[in-house]
Amino acid sequence: MSARSEGKKVLYNKVGGLVVHGSADTYQRHRCRCDECRTANTAKVSAARTRRIKQGVPAGVKHGVSTAVNHGCHCDVCTQAIAERNRLASQERRNRPLAADDKRHGTVNGYVSWWCRCEACLNAMRRYKEERKGIK
Image 1 (cartoon, rainbow, N blue to C red):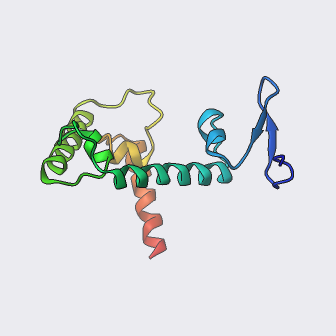
Image 2 (tube, rainbow, N blue to C red):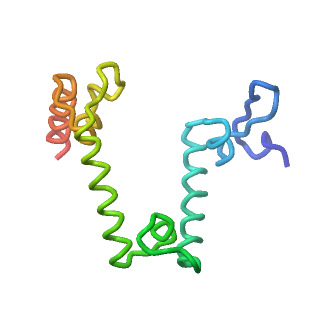
């Protein structure tokens, strides 16, 4: 059955090959970010994660490493290790300011994740908070 008969959008990539929208392959290999490709990729990633969690932590994998967590382990050792890793990463970002030409300036991400308090990041956070107030 051809892609056209399935009702999916069809494009050709730079070398003339067929690119079908609505597939995880198009999302991953061709970097398409249309709604159909995003949905297909999300479904594929979710199914893979569910499969890994059902299989459990493979034999020989140490607890306290991201591999164990990726397989769904939430034991105290793994939970504490991931929390510590995230805390250290946050601390590192706080101690390493954004470069002046960094594209994250003027974003909520720059304010929250990178602890940037430049005027552009402050304004982005103010706008975000004002928008959130309007939603409630």
